[in-house]
Length: 278
Image 1 (tube, rainbow, N blue to C red):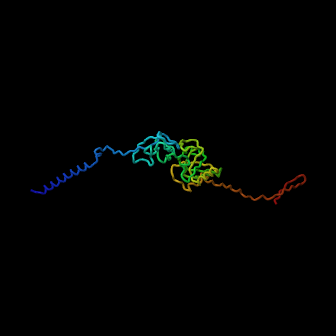
Image 2 (spheres, helix red, strand yellow; image 1 turned 180 degrees about the vertical axis):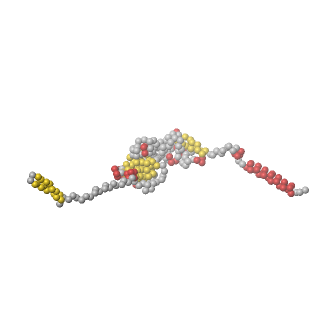
Image 3 (tube, helix red, strand yellow; image 1 turned 45 degrees about the vertical axis):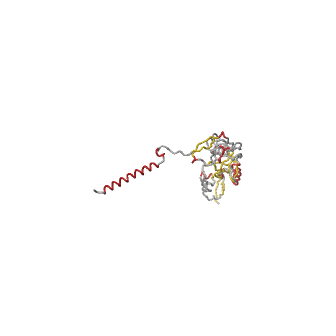
């Protein structure tokens, strides 16, 4: 009897039995959720405070103006409040105020509210080293009245008259603090003044520029600053192009006529005029 075929058969049987045990171990080690492929693991949620209604600039924040919102824990914005005590403080604590208009549904964040009992004003919203300057504008120079607090603008000066008329951007990426006397109005309207935040020297430029020409505002949606070449002033020649001077052709030069002398000769009753060249 040949033993080699028997040994091969026994070896194959042993491998088969081992494979079965290994497969059972792997199946038992899988999490229970694998038995239900349609089931998803729910991430943890947290409750944050949002505005239940519009909260105007400078207004105190009260409990009645708040509403809960559910957010995934891994998507919570920085500075969000997860409890009324952190936002409103204990009973009797001076209120926080909105440092900008908070629209209904927006989360209440640290950078949109003041400290407890703090006064909210335009001056307190200025960055260190900056000044607030008001610019006289109208519906045309203020982008049709669509400039609102918080917008970023460029300021353009137009100066001169007639053929000397010129215009150019004098300040870039300037923050609008208020429109007329409102720091929280987001509606288009007839605008008379726009208050902007600028540095000390730029504030002097604006005051002087208003005395020598007309200021216009242009809205921007980026933080890319133009170079000095891009900011060069524009004149009428840039609109119409350079005009070539027309030179009149000189009249042909002719020699002056020689002077003449007329002599009248009489012969009896007849007379004759004779011309002599000199």
